[in-house]
Image (cartoon, rainbow, N blue to C red; front, side, top):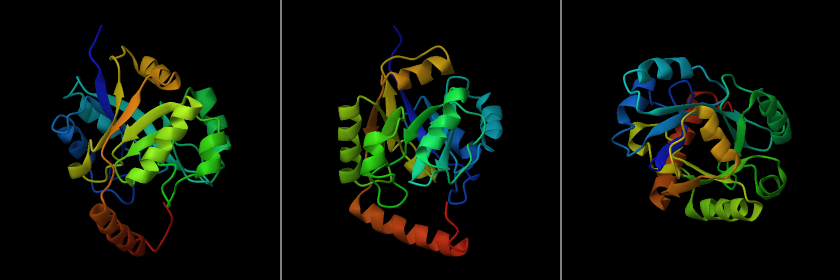
Length: 226
C-alpha cells in the first residue's frame, strides 16, 4: 500500500486578478511547502493549466490537479477535474449541474467566510461533494464550523491554502490516505470523502493585513468583483 499524500487544493496563479504567484513559482515551491502536489484554482478561468502542466514535466513526482474557483451567486465554489471554467454568476446548484456531466467534483470554498462564502443554508443543503474545511485565509471559527457541517453531512473535508503568494503555499492542505494511480481515482476518493483537510487558519494579524491588501487590490481594479 502506498503512503499518504498531501495536496494543496486551492492555489491561485497570476491568471487570477489578485494573485502574484506565477505558474513557475507554484512548481518551484511545492516541495519546500511539504506537498505532493497542488490544484490550480484560478478565479473563473483555467488559463494557467497549460503552463503549469508544461512546467510540471520537470517535476513528474508532483500531482497537478485541474480546477477552478467559480463565482456563483451565493459564494465561491471549487470545481476539480475540469478543463474549462463553468459560467459565473449562476447558482451553486447550476454549477453542480454543469460539473456532473463533465465528471467534476464540486466543493464549496470557505463556506463560512463573511466575504464570498455561501453560508449556512447552502452549506447544509447544496448537493455538492464536499466543503473546504481548512482554508488558509479563513479564521479558525469559520473553518471549524465547515468541519462540523461536512462531518454531519458525510461530505469530503477539503483543505487548501488559498495561496496568492509563495509564502502561504501549503498553509492548509488535503491529505489522502494513500496515493491513487490516476486523477480519476483521486477524484473518486474525494467523492467518497476519503480525504481530510488540515493545516492552519489565518491569524487575527493576518486578517488585518489581508483586509488592507484586498482593499488596495479592489481599488486598483475599480472594485470589480472576483
